[in-house]
Image (cartoon, rainbow, N blue to C red):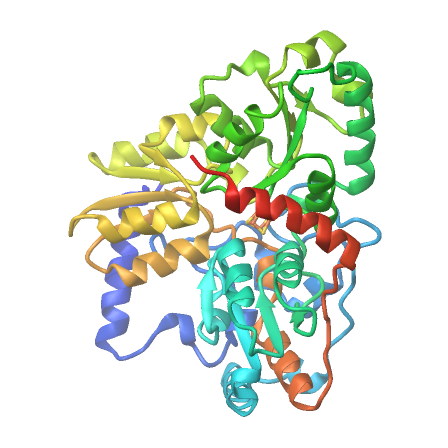
Length: 448
Ligand code: SF4
């Protein structure tokens, strides 16, 4: 079997040969970028699912989240659906789409800002006015009151957060409504409210002078409904950068925490605070008491919702072992949405911003294996050609929902705006937005 090392060397030789002939295999005009399989730059291997090479319009029509998603990642029945795009977009070449996007963006000027998530594909991110994680982009929306509309090239919950933080007259648009987040969909408001009722009954009422029995904490990667639920119930939102500070805030007010929806971020953060596995029962929403006994819940410090990210759960300790065997001295950094065993085996773990800063500060010649989404890893590698950076997973698996925003949808959105229409506007009802803001403001005020 070919080793990662050999593959990396082969890819480097192919790139050198391509550069020497003035070509670029990734921009072969015969195959439009949005119809080409993603190639892992470091290894030259193809994607986790050949469907990534299929016509994107058929992926968008299919039920479920498409390539890379796990069997548990079904799209909820009430999820919004994208209508078909006109042929003038689906049949356009890469060059035509790029030219149309550039022209529409120029004509719209400062009226419209494009927000691009770190995990977004390059063909889309190149047009973004701001690139960042979901909260950075929502903050960018808040800081630009002059814009009439934000085109959010990310996923649904991110557009919701931008709508919550932006002005009432500003529109937030998701270019493809099929761009949801499977992790966010793993905690619905109905399930969370049922869980809360059971927890309240099992843990009893608050006695005078006692801390609240349980504080709800939700990761930014959740629907506006769940953020609002936390706001209404003395809870708070966290990001992958401030999860520990937020848990400390919660423990100053409550005896325990229920953490939605990513069990891995919750477990990794709690573990780093000295909380044991036995004090972190998993809440399975389809089972009574989440599959726990009353005693287990009473003894709990952090009750973890059974959610996960399909992209980050693919990383394994075996991949870290292989990277270390082939690159002695390699530094392994992973995102805290990875399973705890992976985080424990890595040299460092942290948010996307942490990963970016680690790479920015790395000494020339360093070898870094990264456990996060492939589009970001590839971009970081392009920014630091003096380093060897590769994705821990030798099989390319992008965020399959983010991948649904391809240039044709961006072109369609911008040209619609230019024609005076506002397609795919994401509107969070004001009551939900108000409660969500409470939870977000608590997060901004929480101090380490
Ligand atoms: S990377 Fe994971 S958590 Fe982030 S949007 Fe994609 S599925 Fe959701």
